[in-house]
Amino acid sequence: MGAHAQDLEESTAATPYAHSFASRLMGRAVLRDSLTASVVRVSPFHGRRLRPFIWRDFQSMDDGGGSLRVGLPMLHVLRAIRARRSSDGAAAAAADRESIDYVHFQECHVPQTNALLSRTFWPGIDVSEALQYPEFSVVALYRRRVVGCAFLTPDAYVTYVAVAAGWEGAGIAKYMVYHLTRTLPTKDVTLHVSATNPAMLLYQQLGFKPETYVTGFYRDYLPKDSRACPHAFFMRLRRW
Image (cartoon, rainbow, N blue to C red; front, side, top):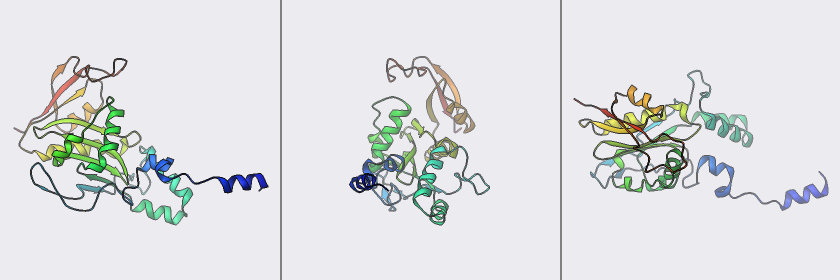
């Protein structure tokens, strides 16, 4: 190594984690390995005791043969980064312990959740109000990163369902919607979905039926230059 290269290397400071590429992939270091606390919480809406985890999924990232599922490009990237920083044994051991964690919505999830929804639908979405009734919410986490979220109102209307780009192959949306439909087992669950959104097929698989075609339903929400379809289907999951 030449003298100039050595001086340059010694003068280059490490990037703080908060501003690093790794933090953009895995989230802020609020907790060591997760973005949720392993404590029981009480809902301010019904006073229900909420478990730390709704479900910890250790299997959906695997293709059934011991290899990483193909439809998860972001997880492939993360594992490749960790493999470069760790010995092969350490990286493999970490992969064996990985899970997608489904939890109720918490205040520490708000920034990432709002950002995910704003990217998925339209700018300026803020779901902080859902903290008032967290039992009608579900957030999917990979370590410290929000990779999915879904919200239901106490009146059984699904407001948002979103999965981060690169995580579509783990069945996250299907589990989140299924979980929400079970939180109010005696009520019809309703939602609107864009007429061109392939998620409509998922909703139909879970028992939702289209009832009405609503022209211009999303027009007031979408930016004027948006190419997204403003029309929607109103769908219902009937209980009786």
